[in-house]
Length: 373
Image (cartoon, rainbow, N blue to C red; front, top):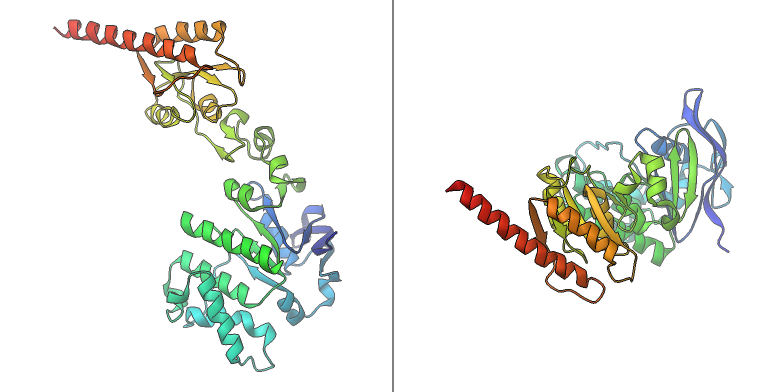
């Protein structure tokens, strides 16, 4: 069993003499990514800043590679752990290469002179984060996202055995968010780095984390694998998102449904109805959806956005009861939209609903035309 590389023991954190969170027990092994999540202001950054000694812990201990960090010099820590925080870095008149090269100083001599090998490692780190083209540009003049990549290169230059990152994806577009996380995964898998970070994007935390630590209401409230943490019921507790609006499979939340009696009936399935659901929700039109099997990937979205959902048990043909319920609701709607082009044995009754809907749409269209004339 691997030993913990970063470990906290009864850690208490806060500001001044005021303790915000007590009894923090974190364990991060080499080759593992542990992610802190929680609402804004819950204390994620405070925990990380206490671990890296940017603020003084108010109790307990932080150990790095089995040693208490309070007994280690800055150079000793720098050779083992690199840091990427959200605090703005404002180096004066430094190029991106010079900023990245700062990561080599724990490994240089007393005068901080970079060797040929050091410079090679700097160029390799910039290439790894796809920032080679930024090397000679002034750091202060590049975008926030580009700065973040250069700072990650600086962290990589240290050749750390552990990396601590506070919301590293904050200033990045979606492409560069994914690239950054892929780089972290590569460091974990190939170099066995221990990674401790905080994230706001739950879908990214679900994708990258080996272990998730939830900070809430002045405590580390829950720890577990992504599968254990990202459930609708717990996300409702942690963030106040209604369970029905949270999709655990994709770790995403839907907006509030349009209120009122269904005006449109949508026949969907296998993802075909999702674009229609979202369009109707944007337009503020309440709708009904069905008949959907409860194991269909579309069902959680329908349950979140529809005023009514008619559902059937997984792997069962649509029952007479579900069909009749759908028929009643369909007949009260002003429009029927069928998103399906094919029907199988299990949803054959949806074909009948689609035919009913076509006839109902034609009758309403004729009535409206007659009224206009």
